[in-house]
Amino acid sequence: MRTEGAFLVSAVREEGKTRFVSIKSLAGMPCKIAPNLDGKVKMLGEPENALKKTGQGEFIIELKKGEEIVLYSGEKPDLTIKPIEFPATDINHWGMEKNIQGMAVIKPVYSDIEGK
View 1 (cartoon, helix red, strand yellow):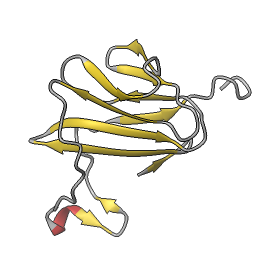
View 2: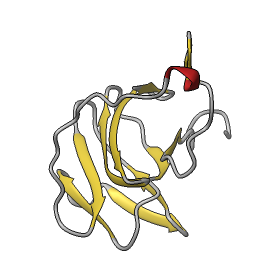
View 3: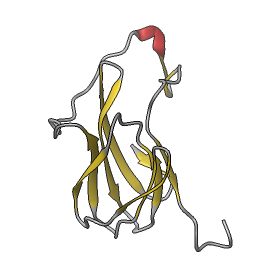
């Protein structure tokens, strides 16, 4: 999905748990993420210092335009993204009708834009 701040984000959840979150910067802005991963969060990608922990389960990621990282915990996951099926009763014209508990939260960081 595309998020505010010009990021492409993909994730895989299995058995109610987030397995990994992939983030690609399209504009070179930092973002704040709470990936909802169990255990120590690990990273694949460059630069190695892009991930900075800011609080309980929250991180700031500083990527240049075009850079991409993958966040995961535990053993390195299979990074294949596949479509998933939902019961027709849970879907409407705009996507999911219900919030899925435990999904990753992503927010752009506007540290240098008019005090935001």
